[in-house]
Length: 403
Ligand code: 3PG
Ligand code: MG
Image (cartoon, rainbow, N blue to C red; front, top):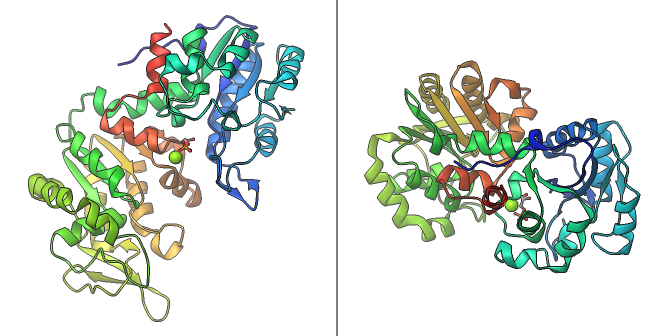
């Protein structure tokens, strides 16, 4: 288990460079609030209460994508969450940035420009190499310490995440601390009862390594979503095929067929597949069929009621439950039952529970479930998957070295 210094170890009134992850959806050029802002705002509020001066580093999108935009809108959203002014500086480590940092007083907060607008940020290189960049060498001397709160980006070996801890006192922020502790529990903790994993969503390449890596820790897997259909296809059912020109299944089948078939035979009864599925009938209503009745030409959008009942019983009888990915297309209310009923069942039990994968966490908000009924709701995507597989996160590892 990694040990790192946290903000509890900081003396009051420091000048802090704080890396957060407010990478968010962008619609028509406008950044959309997501739960990451609220989470990081709590860390920032605590730092400001302790008289620190806070300069924020973050990223948005990637060069060449439509989501690659400046952080002006992000600063506004953060200001809303904090209920106070947040200065936006359209520069990362040039003169304008250095002047603004110089003017920063205790209790002030500013947001520097999108770190990915610096050429040195993105190429994945060793932390030692990142520590030598102009970006890091210019900003580091301006601060007393570096705080990394960006757990959800900690799988990236980028300058703003791994360079600074090489040359500065480095601390984990509250989000980093909470995410790391909860998400590593699957590898680190002993549970005295059944451990269940609920796996859904769209990406087989994310889920298959998880299933394979947690072989010793997880007692049973409840599968749904597109990945669940691919397993049903491997089990000989007429499902998990692209219909109506969609492009979800067939290429994943080609890429992962062998592994899926092997996992299916090796894990046997521990893998629970849907026994029924839901689809849209000609009247536009939700209808269901058992997997024996299903037909290739239909799009299935949720697990059926019988499957949901089985999964609800399994999580109800668990000591720990880890969720990654939704069981159905919960964005459409007609097909939210599987995802929402299973999450509600987890919320009702006392088990240790972690829910992750950006979209799945959104269903908690959409359907008015209470985040406090879960041990942890992760705001991470790729980093969460890596934590489940037990793979280290470079951004966390460098905090440990910095001790
Ligand atoms: C994320 O949103 O997944 C993280 O911020 C990392 O972003 P990336 O996937 O673009 O590297
Ligand atoms: Mg990502």
